[in-house]
Length: 116
Image (tube, rainbow, N blue to C red):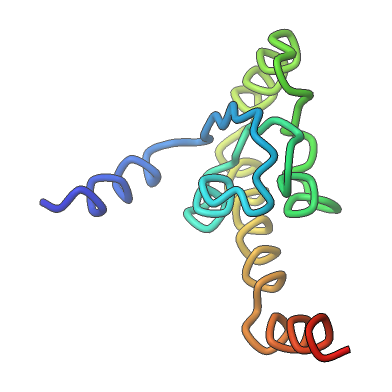
């Protein structure tokens, strides 16, 4: 079995992922990948994380960098969800990401940015 297939299997078993980055990443790939795999990311509010989860139920799982109490609170929140609640939040998050990065929409934004 290839490593990517193993990663997919792990995502399918997980309710969430813990992303503790403190680096200002404009595009936090681990967070996007987690959401696309229907796994709720518990992530620090750095870089592009808030832009990605803004306006979704995933926003409640973001925390201030290095705030250990907030991390524990977000993990507790995730663990308190029923399977149905977890699936609903994860599915809506995935839909949000697919819409956010929809090809035609992204092309228009890039053209507007670079062509004026």
